[in-house]
Length: 336
Image 1 (cartoon, rainbow, N blue to C red):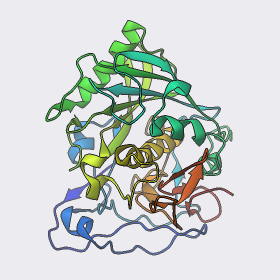
Image 2 (cartoon, one colour; image 1 turned 90 degrees about the vertical axis):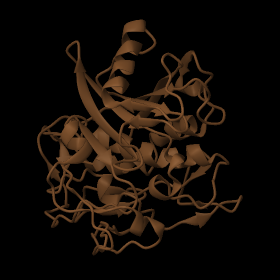
Image 3 (cartoon, rainbow, N blue to C red; image 1 turned 120 degrees about the vertical axis):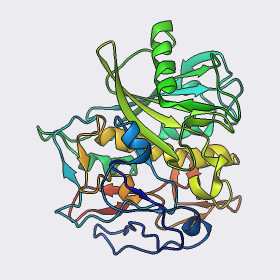
């Protein structure tokens, strides 16, 4: 998320921007449970903390955090003139670890196409494009009126074990960027202007420096050799199950991967509609996925007794809703 003001408020009420299944925004709701007392509230649009130190980034807050509520204006989100991924959203996964991070994932030290990634993360990315869920992003458009297409391609992965972080290690944002650049320089990665380079880490790694306390994941962009690189930092969210996961059971039998696809969806749709942090967000700095973070709408019980809210590619997932830029706006799991 963008432009944050972190104010510790022990014992104070914590407000979340709750969203409705219709296109009408609803009133804020007070969160309950452990997450409500474990983390502070956000008050106002000022940029402090991680984003102040890293102004090229936009973080996804843990559960129980709220940036504050912006009064709706038309659809409740505003275009600021920047570029979008309109034709296609391409994703490259960088699994930065000396061991497999998710069940069925690529072997460390290998590269391949997205079709060769046997993890739940891979399955999710392959089924995201063309789905009613990702079609919510088609309600967003650039300055010429060109709308985002419901088109996602998982083009490649790099399972990098070069300088791989280990449990207990803190990796700075600058180190994450340097690893991506190293991939370009070695030929393991190919640069593309409309690609999101998503960097995943194994258990116990503080990827980016503020994982679990300031954010669960974040996206941003940086310049390298004149290239505008879009990237997402994707720590292992299940290291903090109460703050960075919302699972009740594991729909696909891999708690870590099932938790991760929720935040991956969040960062992918925000990058699509706000790749350089100057396109779509509201007056509080909330991007589309921020406005619906940690809300899931109607859920159902899977065959293994887990909670899910959507089926993509024959698999069940619990994925947060996204903000539709139509009518009066609102949080949906599919569009129309």
